[in-house]
Amino acid sequence: MENSVQSFFKLSETIACSVCRQDIVLYEPAKSEYVVCPSCFSYLHIFTRAETRLNRKLEKPKNAPVLKLGSTTNIHGVGLKVIAYLEKKEAETIYCWREYILTSHDKGYVTLSEFNGHWNFIAGEDFLPDYKQPTSYSFSVSYKDVEYKLFNRYSPKVTAMLGEVDWNVVNEKVKATEYIAPPFMVVKEVINKSQNLTNYYIGEYMTKDEIAAAFNLDKNSLPEQIGIGANQPSKAYDRWMASLKITGIAIVAVLLLHLLFGAVKPEKELINDDFLITYDAKAGADAFKSFITPSFVIEDESSNIEFDIASGVDNNWLETTIVLVNEADNRTWEVSKGIEYYHGVEDGESWSEGSTRESVLLSDIPKGKYHLNVYPSSGDIYRNNLYIRATTNVSMIRNTLITILLLCIFPAICWYLMRNYEKRRWNNSDFSPFVNGD
Image (cartoon, rainbow, N blue to C red):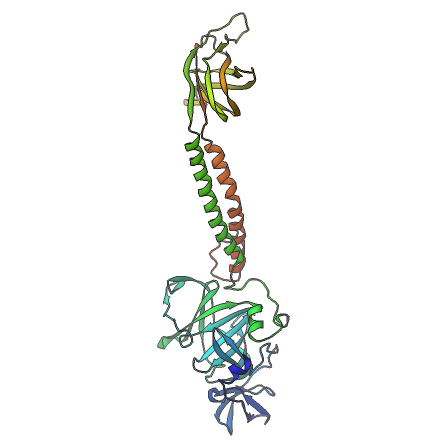
């Protein structure tokens, strides 16, 4: 692959540095107008192969380029050659990063930028076949109907350079703005604000593995990643989106099962009656006579029974014990439930608490013929009625809702992890959507 890529490019040439007279290799002679001497780090303007003039002196690069000048690669199906290495910093700050300028046979320049071990492949209109002019807003841009959020504004400054380019890259004054929609980025560069010279570039995040594979390098030789890249893809976001999809499908399945069970085993009313109760003075202070309900039949192999009880208690209470009796084998199931309702006026304000109606549920009741033994008691000896409604195959909407709630725990955890990841990403920005302390 490397040999086929190299065939697109002319062989390198050498020229003499006008300052130290050392040879300088031009990796792409046809595109060489400004070059840096690797011996004395003079930034030279090339007029002819025999004449170069000093433009300014640069610092020695702090780091050795990890991508070798003159090396070739193929990215997105395009042959590229590395022709320059730049070290840059943000004006008035300590933030520094590195950029590699690559050229193609017929699509111009692209940039591989590296900051804290995070790489971006940045290309302009000439390189991108489906490029569309972004639409700029106050704090975002729209590119191909995707919103890119403002992440950073800065003025880059070249502090060191190796290699050559065909424009005065060291002395150009640029106001740059970055907008992100991971894994992509839109870079807006204003070169001359008075003349409204604005260029847009599209960046795409590249992993260390991708860079190492593209240049046939050991990925351990690449800079160590620190923190989260501005447009680094979020596995936490992907996990959250996947959890939403899976949980949504699971919730639909639970609701369908709920409806299916309701259709296969519909609710059936067994008892619905208002029973007369009488105070039993011999049995105790609050005891009423027990009674037996009419018989009823449960036809399904296993069912639940819900008992609704009600009474018009007023500033008083009523409690009842209900014993379900299987008339074939005298097996019993017992439940107790109380009703209490109080109300009044205090400091001119009305108040109330309790209810005149309650319900209780029995589960896993086998088929058979049954009746109820009912044992009521109340603080109101004049209470004379107790309403009982018994229903089998009651729809367990509460269990369904609990199941749905449990299903939502996993995406909630994924959302929290995703949100925490995004907060860490935006800690590097002055335009974070997260409020301090949120």
